[in-house]
Image (tube, rainbow, N blue to C red; front, side, top):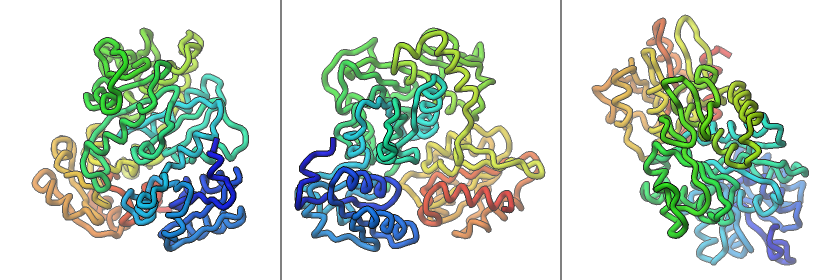
Length: 470
C-alpha cells in the first residue's frame, strides 16, 4: 500500500515527468488520497494535454519548468524513467533528503496478490515481455503486459480489476528506483554496453540491472542467458550469500538457464530444428514466425519463465498450449518489422534498435545485400562493432542525424557511406534511389531518436509512412 505519510494532511508527493508513466502515477496517487504536484520541463502538446487531464483530478501540474522549492519539500518524489538523475528537480530532492522512487515502485505497492514476471536486459526485453504475456494468456490466465513495454504499471492498477499475472518489462532506470522489486520470476535476456550517455560507465549500467536481484529469496525463480557471461555474473553484483546450483550464478532461489545450444534448461536443438524446454520438445523452429537466432533466444527465455512460474505450466497440456502460443505470436512493431517488399526491395523497420549491439544483431540476421539507415542521437558507443557484419552483407550505410559524422568516422572504408542531415524524407529517398531488386533497406539506427523524433515509435511510424507513400 502507498505509505500513509504520503497522504497525510499538509504533505505532498511530487511527480517529475508528464509522459505516460508520470501521468498514470500522478492519477493513481491522487485516487488514493495523496496531494500531488506534477511537473515537466517540456511545454508541448503532450505535456499540456497531460496537465489538463491531471487538473481535472485536482492535481497541480506545471509544464515548461519545475518548482524546485516545492519539490524539495515533498514527502517523496516519483521520477519518470526518462529523467536523468542529475536533472535539477532530482538534485533538489536529493539535496533535501527526499526519497526518490519510480512509478513502478508506487504501483507495486498497490498491486496486491497479482503475480508478475519481470524482464530486463539490454536487448530483446520488449519482445520477451510480450511473449511472456502472450504465453500466459495462451494458458488461459488473465494477464497484462506493462512497464517499459508501453502500459505503465500504474495504469494496470487504475483499471480497477487487477489481473492474475503481469508481464513486466523493466529498464535499468526503473530498477534503480524500485527497492521493493520481488518478481515471481526474474528474466535477464542479455547484457551489452548501453546508455553510456547517462551512466559514467558500463559497470554502473550493469549495477542497475543487477538490482533485479535485490530482494532474492529461496522462493525466487530466475531465468538467465547461459550464452552471456555478463548475465551469469550479474547476480553476484548484489548477492553475496545463498546456495550455488550446479556451479551457476550465486543467488537465492532456483536458477534456470536458456541457450542457443543444448547445455541449458531451455535450448535450441539445431540438429532436430526444435526448441526444447525442461527436458522435452516445445516447438519446431520453422513454426516460430520471428527473424533470427536472437528471437529464438527470446522465445526460449519467455517459455522457460512461464514454465518456471508454476508447476502447472509444465504439464503435457500446458506444453501444448505454450507451443500454440509461440506459433501464433507475431513480431512487434518497430522490432525487425517487415514494412513491405516494393519492386523487389525488402524494407524492414527496426526503429527499436537504439544501441549498437541491437543493430549488430539485426545486421547479422540479414541474408541479402543491405542498405543500413544508421543515426540519431549518439549514446556513447562506438559504431566500429558493426564493421564485421556489415562487411558480410552491407551494401551501403546512410548516416543521418546528430551522429552522422561519428558513424562516418567509425565505419569509413567498411562499406560506402552516404552522410545526410536530419531530413528523414531525404534519407528514405536516398535509400530508394540506391536500392536494387533483391536488396534490403534496414532501419536499425543504433541511436536514440530524440534529435529528430519524440520517440522510437514515431521514428518507426514515419519510416513506414514514407516507405508506403501514406
